[in-house]
Length: 281
Length: 281
DNA sequence: CCATCTTTGTGCACGCGTTCACAAAGACAT
DNA sequence: ATGTCTTTGTGAACGCGTGCACAAAGATGG
Image 1 (cartoon, helix red, strand yellow):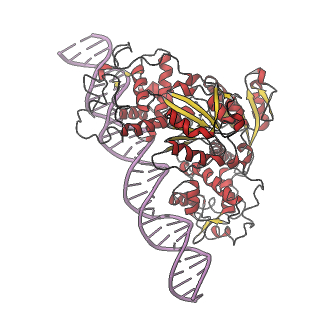
Image 2 (cartoon, chains in turn yellow, purple, brown, cyan):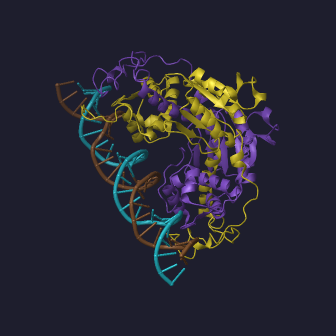
Image 3 (cartoon, helix red, strand yellow):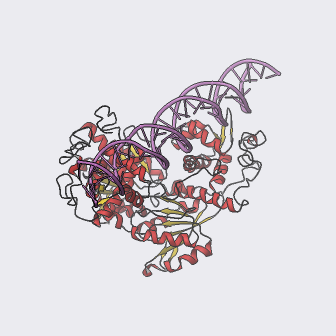
């Protein structure tokens, strides 16, 4: 670091690793709390604890932004709040549209956190004509016919999709065509977008399944009878490598999936994919 | 993402990397779709496209589960659906409680996706006495006084927190004390939990901020006037290194944050942290 | 002005995750 | 049976992210 006026390839754009960017909001939140309590400075140790991360990691993260700390003292809270806000682009106004005003969309619209950090709900959009004009969170719902006009008129670049999975891709395409370049997707579907468009997804179903996986493992360690036992002769558990001949071939037996290994699954179709805007994550 | 024990000392858990586990639900969803359309088999290429990932990655992921494919043909859809479901622990019933029935909690309760994959809403809990007994999504809300009893009586091991940030940690502690070992947190706070408890968080505010960061960068490349210019004499931009005498010291100037570098931020307190169950992510 | 103490900033090493590229396995046609 | 063609499963290289450990910077006290 020091005098290095030498190389700085990562200067502007390429600096800040993705992992660091993802933690900045966390630091910012912790710092805001300290700021409200009028705490002047914090050490990396304290702030790290508040943000739930390792202090070394925090220091390294900040080092990507520049050297904003004072050795022997720590970081100036107000100054850091400002620097991070600026880095995240929160010093400017970001108009946002929410498409799909169902249970979830309405909940999102009511979220006060939007306005807090530079985000402003420019419009609520829904395909249901009956919803048009009806106010949600104090904002009248607009019909999706006006989607393009709304995007253009307000210079919206961030869109939130809270529609049923079936409509998500279509809505996404329209948003992108209208100029949106960042999308937060709550619909349980994989969205396909052109280069230059960022998509982040929030999927409750996936989060629960991940928790279930770990939960099952925990239970398995205590009572090795519930989870471990695979229905039939399946590798993966007994031997280290599942490549053993006796196991693998047991599955794709011809075209009939009715073999012993794969029992008939619940007949009902997965409401997961079909689920409306009711669910986010 | 989860604030919980991120430490994965690779116990002897031999197998399935975290990153792979996180993708399994994605594959499962894609496979379920194929299953409904009665597609008998899929190649890694096709399935990868449907799940939005790289085919090599998908094959490697599956290799951790065992060799369930047939060279020259692909994977048997039904069989794979079963194997992944089993691996994720979805073949068993997971009673779940949702704490905090505000806008978000209600939206979550209405989410049909819960029931779809082995997850069952065992109870809805809220601290507001006025909510008690009132049905939400067909399930009567119970008062939080009964939280412990509900957990124990139903053998609940997964809890969803959709309360305001201020109540989250307290609710979390109670859930854990009552026996919950997996938590999905929608409140904008860092939860502290003992070892053995998994926490995953969903935070809209953070997602938006990450999008804003990238959005700002995109804009900056086109019009280098909007984002770059820091308000006043701040390092990091003008000069390559912020360590220059005239810059860095400008910040932590005494205790008064009113110096030129860090302009007075919006006076309003951050509703972000205080925000009720209205918001998830 | 010097000694000591605190805390930052970072060089370095390690491990995980991603991707490439290919040998081998099996299906299918002849 | 044998050859060809398709697709899997994986060895190996690479890059990113994490955490350790420490030198340097600066505060603080004598």
